[in-house]
Structure formats: C-alpha cells, structure tokens
Amino acid sequence: MKKMICFVGAFLLASSAFQMAAISADQVLNNLKKQIAPDKRTAIWDVKVEQQASAVTITGTVGLNEQKDAISKELAKNGFNKVSNQVKVLHDAVPDNKKWALVKLSVASMRCEGKHAGEMATQGIMGQPVRVIDCTSDWYRVQTPDNYISYVPSSSLFCRSEAQMQQWRQAKRYILTTYGSRLVTEPAGDETVTDLVMGNILEYKAENGDWIQLATPDGRTGWVLKSEVEEFSQWAKKDLDLNLVLKTAHRMLGSGYLWGGTSTKLTDCSGLVKVSYFSSGVILARDASQQALYGLKIKGSDWHKCEFGDLLFFGTKTGRVTHVGIYMQDGKYIHCSGQVKINSLDPKDPSYLYSPLSASRIAGQEGTPYITYVRNHPWYF
Image 1 (cartoon, rainbow, N blue to C red):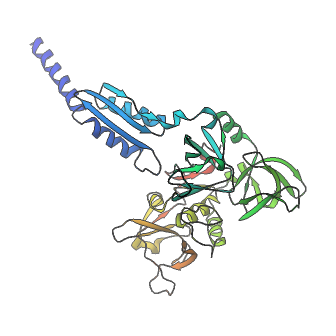
Image 2: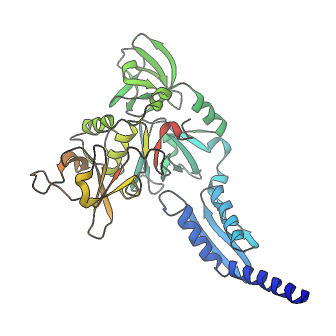
Image 3: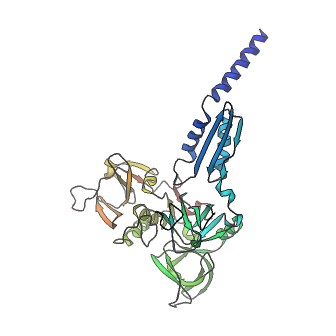
C-alpha cells in the first residue's frame, strides 16, 4: 500500500509539472506581452522564442531591465526551468551620465523615427524629464512621463545621471503658468535668452523686484516676471481645477492644428487635452485612442450625462477612436479639428459636429492608470 501511495504521489507531481508546461513558451510570452507591453507606443518589445523540448532560448530586444526580468519569472512560473534569457536591454547600453535627460528647448519635436523627415509623434517642453532608452546616434530614443516612446535630436536635450536627476528633483524650481513668455537677459530687458511656453520648468537663481532669475536645464540664465511663474512644488500641491483646464483650452481658441503638437504653441486634438489638464497638474495618456481607455467610462449615447471637463471620444463606425474633445456644458465641447473651436453634440444645434463613441470622466479618477498628478510622479519629485 505504501508503494502504491508513493507511486500515485509521483504520478500526480509529474502530471502537475506536465500541465504547467503544457502551454508553450511562446504562448507564455505572448500573454506576458499583453500585460506589460500591449502598446508599441509605450513599450519596446521585440522578443523571439526558440523551444526544444524543455529547453527555451529567448532572444530579441526590450527597452528596460524589468521587462527582461519579467520574462524569466513568467517562464519559471509556468514550469520552464531550462531558460536561456539572452534578451538585449537597450537602456543597459546607455552610459550612466545619459540615462536621463531634461528637454532644454521651450518645445522639442519628438518623432516616430530618428530623422527630421520622420512623422511627428509628440512634443516635449522645457524641464520635462525623459528616460533615455537608446542613444547610439544624434537621435535619442526616449520615454516621456506618460510612457510615450519617440525619437528626439540630442541637441534638444540636456543629459543627466540618476544622481544629477535627484539633485534636480530636490532643487527649487518654477513653472511657467502663463500662456507664453520670454526669458530675457536682464529685468525689463528686451534681449531674449529663450522663448517660454506654459508648463516650462526652470531652476531658481535670484530675484530683483518684480522679476525672478531662472536657469534652463542647460544652464542659460535669464529673467521673467514673477507674475508669470509659480514655485513648482507649491503649484504641484494643488488639486485638479476643471475651471483652469477649460480656461487653458479656451485660451487656444482659433490656433491651428499640428499633428503631434503638445504645447500652447500648437496642438493636435489629444495634445489640446494633455496641455489643458497639465495646466492643472495632471498627466494624461498621449493619444486619443489611449486616453479613451482610462477614467470613468460613459456611453456615447449617454452624452447628456457628461459633466464639465469630461473627455469626449469620436471615431469610425467600427469603434476606432480617432478624435477627442473636452465637454463644456449644454452639449457644447471644445476640441482641435483644423483649429481649436467649439461645437455641439446636439444634432439640432447649428454648430453640431460629430456624435461621440464614448466619454470619460477624469475628475475623481486621479491616481488611476494614466491619470497621474505631477506631484505623485517619481520623475518630477
């Protein structure tokens, strides 16, 4: 009887191990990709699997070390004990003094390819921290605080080590809260050091009456009116103010459309949403199709239930999201389509334009995925 019990136990153990490994290594990693790298806009994942019996070899490229570690852990969890993880991590090859960078221009264009003729993907603004994933040429592949990945000329960035970034996070900084301005060489002077746009972050240097001296990420110093900036940590403590969000959007009325635009100079539709919410200290996902995934969902047919500041999503008959706007009240919404303008959701209104596929409420959802207060983002503080 004792031998029979041992035999049954061994059989059950073998059966359990077989069931764990019944799923192929390729299936395991496909499932993992859906969890940690579902969108190529926010994650680099080019992984290949070679499996011979119980031996598995993983090759290819990922962006970050935690992705490579997750591969080993997930395979082990599914019964694969003979794994050779040869995946290349791009971020590992970046020199320590270039692991991070700050955008040093008021607005920097970021593209889908590492060339000036490449499609514009998004923009970065002065003082925005980025993680450098690859820097093998004059074009750096970077990740912005909303996880978006794109290419930017090295001349638009000022690179820093982790230690230097930590110093920046602890430094006294100011953020431009007016629509746009200039950093000038002396108080009340007219010689420009750089132009500035809303959201630019600079380091404090000195004060002189109504003027404050600030430094760009690459060390250029100049003066700006105190009334146009706010101490960064105090600004970041404020909670979401939907009146400020809509005020920012309204200040852009009439401005043109720029694919990939994400600053008060020019925006695309989702860029207008991002700029408006960032003015009140909230970081949203980059593209309309990404923004539509987050927040408290509302059916498009229930747009009458929308509240001030909700996001409205529009698109194709198949349900693909291609456009976004911000709800105001009484069926009116502001959006960037050709130019920043106001239209209506009510088909009876002369200004009617588009019926929404869905809507999302951002207010009350702060701290949920892709709705992040700047004060809670570890890249800033």
